[in-house]
Amino acid sequence: LHQPMYFFLSNLSLVDICFTTTTVPKMLWNIQTQSKVITYKGCITQMYFFVLFGGLDNFLLTVMAYDRFVAICHPLHYMVIMNPRLCGLLLLVSWIISALHSLLESSMVLRLSFYSDLEIPHFFCELNQMVQLACSDTFLNNMVMYFGAVFLGGGPFVCILYSYSKIVFSICGIPSAQGKYKAFSACASHLLVVSLFYGTILGVYFSSAVTQSSQSSAAASVMYTVVTPMLNPII
Image (cartoon, rainbow, N blue to C red; front, top):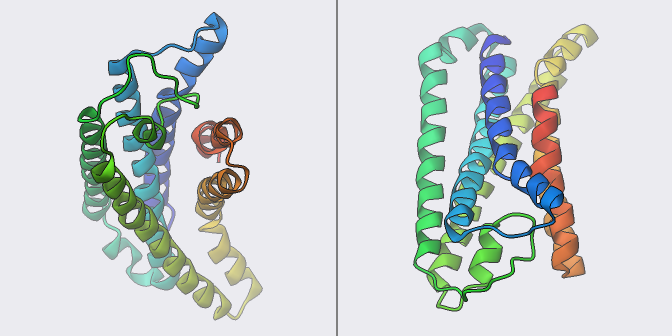
């Protein structure tokens, strides 16, 4: 019941390493050189890979929630359902959707106009900050961002909640305490990663909504852009 889970966890660790690589080296270089400059091409490239690997994190966590749902709720059919072909297909679909979404968001930013000397109140080229600082019409960009947040962010989150609601009901139906412990331990690592990922994102969202300060929002976003992805491979 653990083999496909380790397959997805290894891919999640790889994606998280790539995710932190898009922001941390540049941030450390800026601190070392005391220079906060990035080129336009570098900014667009950083934004593309940040959205790509952030979306992949989201989709992989959803796929892993489905994997744990099948393992706990349908253990006798687990190896039939979660066969290597389906695992590879789920991973491929996650990559394709994330790449297309990231390409769309980056292409929408390319059509915007900016002032020649622009200051981004963040430690990396964050998509929302870039759109807000544009000096041209951003209606289409905002619509694409909102639809992406609802369908590609909220949709997977709802699927994870549904999967774990089924898992909880199944675990509660197990008569022995040892059986409950085994069932819970089969999804404990994924549950911890999900809690860290969505907990930090929601924390950053609510803290920025309350404080309305770009500096505090940027400092809080370090949690889900740096700290959480670095902890996931350890977990």
